[in-house]
Length: 263
Image 1 (cartoon, one colour):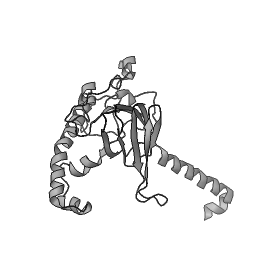
Image 2: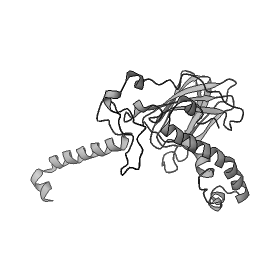
Image 3: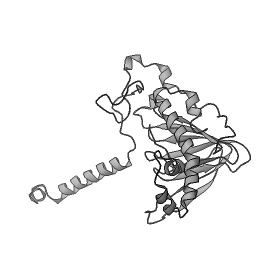
Image 4: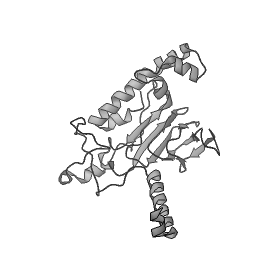
């Protein structure tokens, strides 16, 4: 109260406004702003040597070359195998695949889907996403969160044609499906160098170790036999995702990126 009387109400209003602006800025931000022009990720660094980093350490700038800023992993469509359970592939360009993105707050993904192919419902907990369709057309959508008082669990979805784009708010469950008769492709932009991906089928039924089947059975109003069947289906696929992610972390290359969703 003494501070209010000394400084006066106008000054206090200014302080409160400044605090509000700073808080809003922190909430809206995705990745922190970089503190240097670039920080090419040093993927050879091994965590666990007494300290951990929120991101990747930088290579010595003296060793950086122009080639570090070029990425070739998105130029070609992936070959989708008949065994692929989703009929789709995702070529990722996150910081661990393209080290030049480290600290820059951006990432890219290329999606390729055969007719009937889907990118299963998933979330990016760290990024907003823009999907730009480059070939064919896709059914794209997201679901508002359950606590949205104006539109709880409302579905926002539609057909998006080549040359059009669709924006997906950060953290919301979303999906893509090729309802057309020819292959479709997209280039997706995300405002984090590590957007994170949580596919709902893999997260719930492919967790390692497994989530308690009784909990899943009650949550989805099915019996435990159905849950066991889903866990059996997705556990192997989830294991592939985990192993490929670990390989990419240590030895990133285009082949591994193309196989990320191929199965």
